[in-house]
Length: 352
Image (cartoon, rainbow, N blue to C red; front, side):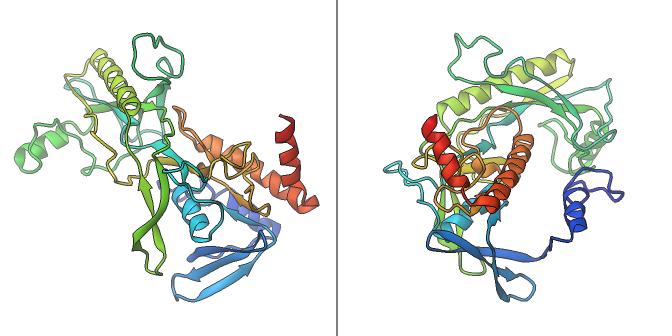
């Protein structure tokens, strides 16, 4: 997303992959879709993958397997591979799929303002440029008369949104025709949005599982999300909408349009931050990986990514996920050196 032809952005294509290639110890296989983690006698033995161009299947043996996919894919691969006990919401037992949460349709709500006499350049600077304030985060504000816990960060960002598709207009504007064209051009540089990035709690009734009906082109079940918004979710989101509305009014917007609070989870994946399902912890009964992202159940299998986060704080998870990746790399090295990493982690847990 928003790649750079000159290699000026610090993304894996520019940093991690070239660095790995220089070692001479890496190989990259594109168009390879992993369908299973293969295992025997409690140890991962490799992966089964398919070349999506030819449909041919391959087995890649390995001493250590690292899953570094997105939350949905990490969970799906473990469930398809029969690794770990799937979470059961009826008994609340099991770990794989448990604690699904993240920032989705109640976490990026706020207010948009339209200005007549002020213009803003959305296309100046980096795609993630913006500002944030933490006055309404965590316990930085008085919760005495509020009906929720936790808080969130307020953000104003610009992502270099493409023209025409993202020319926002006031809600009463027709979606086509002369008036739409006129206002689309007029407000192209005259609107801003401020939103509340709210913390999201994990709930026992929200989880990931394999879909009993829908399958992919290879006949494997798709991942299914079961998620229900609670009063906590809605109350904290409404609080954020109200604060953002106040800020937009104070900025002098001529038209202020607060976001609407959804009745329920919108069942639509829109590229937000989804976490959980293979959560990190100290107890194998309630977590899937230790603090090296190493599976309690399978010591030579490491699962890295947002899937290990058991709770979503108010700010974005990318730096934390990056730090956990470094920690996992350290764990892989330790395991390959002496193979005693999991025993060591269990001893540390017992001491604690």
